[in-house]
Length: 142
Image (cartoon, rainbow, N blue to C red; front, side, top):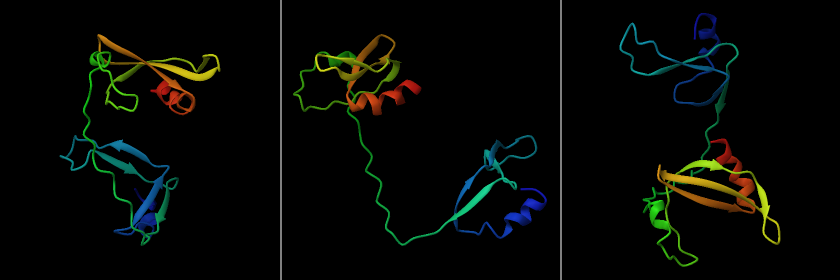
């Protein structure tokens, strides 16, 4: 904040309150003059929108506990003979996301996605029905 902007925000920003701040810019802090405590700074001006978030007495739901994954390499998936209800953890990168299409006698919606966990191991997944609509576009964008 500079000049008149300081007076403009002086009574809008109160210590220990929570705000939703939008239409502002975030910039890298120049390191040429001093050794900064922070890496970035915000530029608030007359265009910036500051909305105070009113506190409430509701108890927030706790965050879920962290999950430890028991990762299975893609190269080992073919050797597994899991039961239909078995779950395995796989970590990979989407390298191809095909278009949504219809397959089978009943023309079910599906989308094929190729993932890899190393350059030599790729795995083809098929998302069926709603997963194709809901999850598929997300993979296509990334």
